[in-house]
Structures are given as structure tokens and as C-alpha cells.
Length: 134
Image (tube, rainbow, N blue to C red; front, side, top):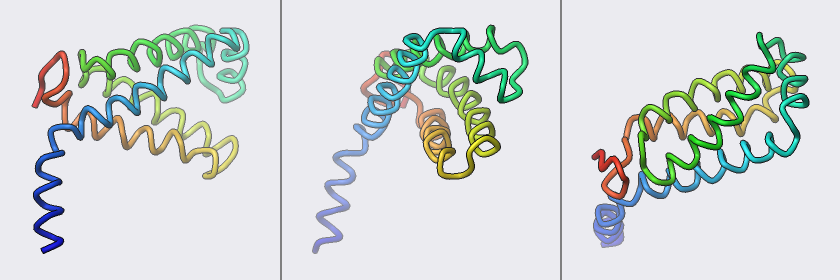
């Protein structure tokens, strides 16, 4: 009985799954991009340079704005798959950097964000998106 009720509820909620994931992930990326803007490009470039990322000033600028714009795009459901792919690449680098710099404890957030971006990439924007990808 309980299993049947849960299956029915799950089927009703499944069209909202991509929307929920996009909203949560989008807000986190906007917050991360905004925090980078507040710190300033020089500070982010300094961290990137210490982490061994080439052209740190350039990539600090690019990553900051991709996080901001990507977060907005995910929330709106606009160009979901391209932004999810690019943000996944950023999260791969972030996971590796954090693993090398501070260990697994500090790599957990970028790793979860990578998994989330990959899931969004696979699902598409869903029914409730500007793209309307199903």
C-alpha cells in the first residue's frame, strides 16, 4: 500500500525534478559567482595561481561570470545543457584543486555540484524551462 502511494506521488512529482534541481544548483552558482565578484578578480586570480591554474586572472574572470550567468540560465531553464556542461567542467577542476589543496572534506561541495550539473545535463531543462527540454 505504502509503496503504491509513494510510486503515485513520485510519478506526479517527476516533472518538477529538473526544476527543483535547477533552482537549487542555480542559486548556489549565483552565490559563488557573487562571492567571487565581492572578493575581486585579483584575489580569485591569486588563489587560482597558487592552485596551478594557468592564466589565473583570465580564468578568475571567466569562472566568476560563468557561475553568475550559468546560475541565472539554470534557474530560467535557458541553454540548460550547454551551461550544465561548462559548469561541470569548472566543477571537475574545482574538485581536483580542492582535493590537492585541502583534501576530501573541502572537495565535497564541488563534487556534489559536479554530480548535480551532470544530472542536469542528462535530464535537460525539463517541462518547466524556457528551453522546454524533456
